[in-house]
Image (cartoon, rainbow, N blue to C red):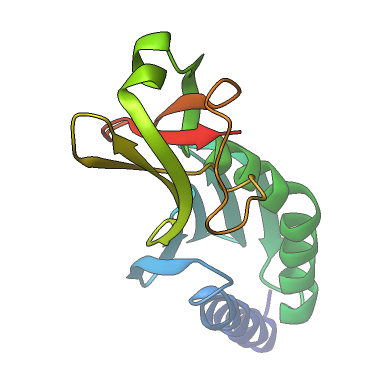
Length: 188
């Protein structure tokens, strides 16, 4: 490699590296976690990490989901920026993004228990109605011994405000999520 080729290779290395860093620094829902002269790391809330690493003759791009390597790309410095970007972007959007979303949803609230109201609970309730609340719609239970209890409806229910629910058919769902206290919802 003569001096001219060396200069051209160095310019391509810099432009591909700088271009990838600029294009991916704020990519979709990712944010920059780390930027060094030879390394860029971007992350998002779904446990996804994309790392760009300058190697001796290539730029290596690694995609990880929850710490597990799912895909690696290797681009020689002479590859055009748009080619590298398009290759990563198209593969990410078609293959990886959906996979991450499924795993992320799995980390959301899950139904850990489902049960009908007990006879004791039903007899303790004097009346109920659906009301608007900060959670969408909730069921307002008026207790025979006084007091009111509110339990949000599961968002899939299609009841209207002021409707009364059938206590015999209603279910109480317990939703769990790692690191959070259980929450309760009513399903009709």
